[in-house]
Length: 110
Length: 112
Image 1 (cartoon, each protein chain N blue to C red):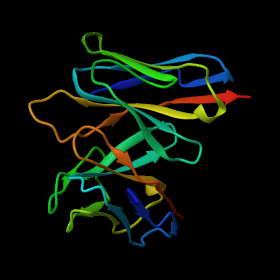
Image 2 (cartoon, rainbow over the protein chains, first blue to last red):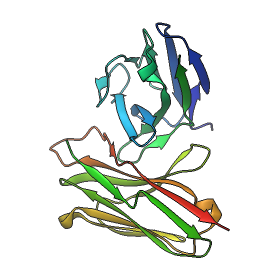
Image 3 (cartoon, rainbow over the protein chains, first blue to last red):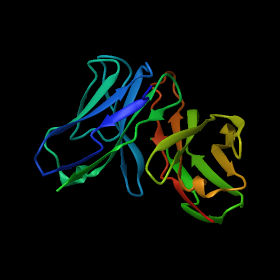
Image 4 (cartoon, each protein chain N blue to C red):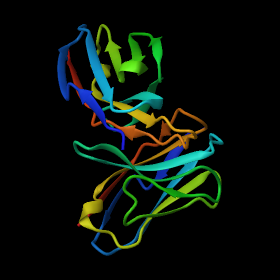
C-alpha cells in the first residue's frame, strides 16, 4: 500500500523544455491536487480534480496543464518551462476534508 | 480570497519545553487542518479541526471558529518535532471542493 507517490523525485530542465510530473494514489480517493511550495510562501494550489475526467484551476494555474484520465493518476504538465517554475511540487489526495500528501518533486529550471 | 496568518514565523525551543502556535484566518471556514512538514520535506496531516478541541499524544489543537483562530499546542517537545507547521483552511461556502489555502507556516527548531 504505497499511498501517494510522485515521479520523478528530482528534475533539472532548461528554459523552454517540457515535462510531465506524475502523481499516483492507491487510496481510491476522488479528489486530487497539485501544489507548489516556494520559500516563505507556504503551499499554493495549482490545479485540482474532483474525480476522473475532471480538472479545475487553483490559485496559480498559469503555465501548467493537468489531466486526470484515470482515477488513480493526476498528471501535471509544463509545456515550456520558465525559471519562475523552479519549485517543489506536491501532489495530495483526499476523500473529503483531510488531504494526504506525496513526497514531492524538486524541479529546477535553468 | 481568505487570508491565513501564522505566528510566530520562527520558534526555537529546548527539548522538553512547551509551545503554542497560532493561526488567524479572515473569514468563516468549512475546514481547518494542521500539517507538519519534517526536515526531509514530507507533509503529515496532524489534525482536521474546523471547531472545538482535539488531542493526539503530546499535540493538541483548539479552533475558536467564532473568533477565527486556531491554536496548536506542543507539550514536552522533542527534536523530532522540528520542522514547519502549516495551518490550512477552506472558506465557508454552499458547496465544497475541499480546496485548502495555506498559511506561510511556523518554523520550529527543537534543540537537544
